[in-house]
Length: 466
Ligand SMILES: *Cc1c(COP(=O)(O)O)cnc(C)c1O
Image (cartoon, rainbow, N blue to C red):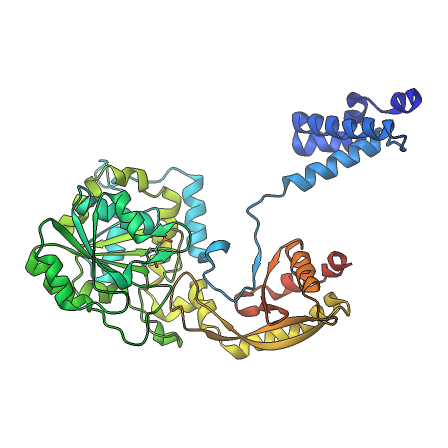
């Protein structure tokens, strides 16, 4: 046993080995030394158990490979083949090249963030987006915060934060995934929830009755993004609500959710209420997300009446919820793309992916099938199948888009084979995320653009399945 222990190299010897030097070069002396110590600890354990031991070079090589494995970032790029274009858990909208470049530029240099270049005086962060977003929506004024949840929180807190009543239909008391539940946000904003109507039907008279009570601060309309109430239903239109609120002297706030800036029917999609429409319906404030249908980075827009936006900007919470120069740069570049609607679908990835035609996706699926068959190694029957993509992030929840995917059905029909395949796909150099449906794993190709990279990646699969 003493013999074995004596054979274990010292930390210094390993650091001087070729692999040790390579580890120092790549990760620095501190990291390399710490990792080599860990490997040597394991070596001493092996020695006690009488197992054969590594020399200095082998210890260094093992430490180096462990350092390489642990240096892979955890926020890794993946192939989103779930069929959900705006997948919240996979980071929602992909940014346009122009937005990526603008963000990178802003990251590398000082920028005129709150600085007027003409006068040399202090400027406003919101100036960079105000005129763009007002032109695109017809709103009088605008500001931007961390996300739409923040936009709603800040708006409610500013307009009804001291226990003011906020009237909402029971049919619109939404929960968006995660922790965004309207009644909870309202409580945290300091507003008093005044529910009106029932789950399926809310009438004008319900709002009128509530508006005649004491202490009403605002009327809130919420776009029921991720569900739809169908059948025996009734909701009051925004235009009517605007009239009722104006008569009562309180503002109407419309939380639109997805910020659609253009009419999507032009690209064959179903209509979704646009911000411009909500403004024209005379909502005093409209809030929406930057990274849903708008196709930009995470952000929350608040647009509407100048006096209300000014009040919102004076709220100390605004400072806690504001966005940084990187996101402002990406947002500005994204919004600019909307000035040229003819080329929008080419330049804005979200729209490009949503507008993709079934036949184009089918051609890709057929071209990739041989790679998929090879990767499946006889364990799965691979087929090109029709499937249905979703927009995601709560937009048009019941509408699907005709798409095409690669289906992997286990030859032995076992569910565990599918789980093993899903795990192997996630373990690829660029992890692949699909979805499981009807006893098969489906890779919906709607969001695949770099087919060559995907094919090369898939060719590595057989190692993972073995
Ligand atoms: C998505 C959504 C939100 C939350 O927006 P985030 O940008 O995710 O914070 C709020 N309200 C509605 C109606 C939504 O659809």
